[in-house]
Image (cartoon, rainbow over all chains, first blue to last red; front, side):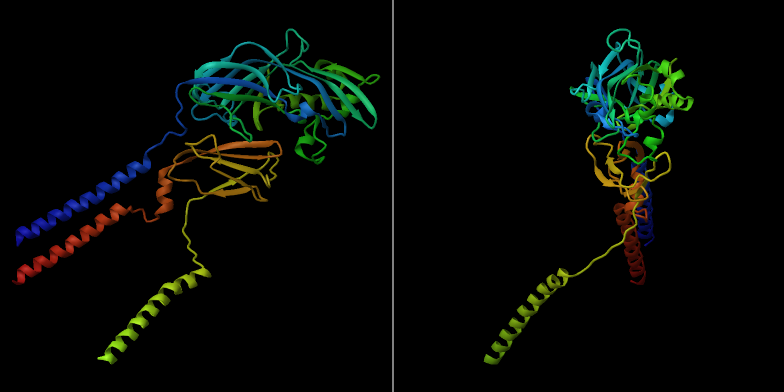
Length: 283
Length: 155
């Protein structure tokens, strides 16, 4: 009898031990960390593009009722780099993100593209072939003064026609202060920057010119219009229906508040899709 | 004898009829029935606001699972307060991405989803099926052992 009782107790101890063991095993599974992102290996091609969106390609009515159409919208880009970071970069992390970088891909050269070209949907800036596959979740670029070509001397050159109530102004607006931008992952109706083995992935530098001129389609007190210059202050500077000015000229020609507004616009002109980018003047 | 046969035949018909009623009744009942269950789960609440603090009412939401970053796992729309609720698939732990966009403005946030949250969501008691089976075995073995022990002592 004692032997049977002992055997019973022995089995109960074993089963209780098993119970605890399974409990511990479950906790280990629960605590196991899985890869945060899809593991992509090998190499592919990164395609760098720039996009001025329909505002620039098709024209639009700005906040003060001027209808703008663009013949050219040149931007000159340099020091373009894409990054894979861990954890994924977010602009709230700020500029100091070097410690997070796992992979960096540089696009050599200085590139001037015309965002008003109807074919620039988006405009090709350049390609980097045989680069590591993975998720490129940060992009850095600089807008620099073009050293040659139609946009020489400017980081952005907008040329076109503005019309309001029968008044027509042919304009050429050149921005000549260089700016650096740092953005995160593309925000939009498709995913970009996810490069799979043997494939290609786009990385887009997006420019929102409605931030400069405002949008008549939005309410006057909408943020986009409150923070935009509009075209009215520029139209007031036109001589015989023509306006050819640079940012440097405007420092003395515009009201101080308007000039400050224009400088501020340059720091939130660039996006990655609809996601804002960090910005700082280089000069 | 004939009476017995008739009685058996009647009993058989009643049995078949009863069986049919029993089969059909639940079907009839379920046609207009309502079955409500309530299970607490771990949901995610998103609140999307413009920098000004204004809610992104009607903002388009796209949720991406960590193992399928190219296609949205879920899409939806923010309510008037800019809120959106969803329950992640806890069997796909990792970094989930949530994108909210409206009229040219948008942002993307990331949310770490762990299997621990799954356990909490699916079984608030914290016991797995295996653990429950082992517990039942322990109790059964204890009961049988105790019974055998006393039966031996009596004999």
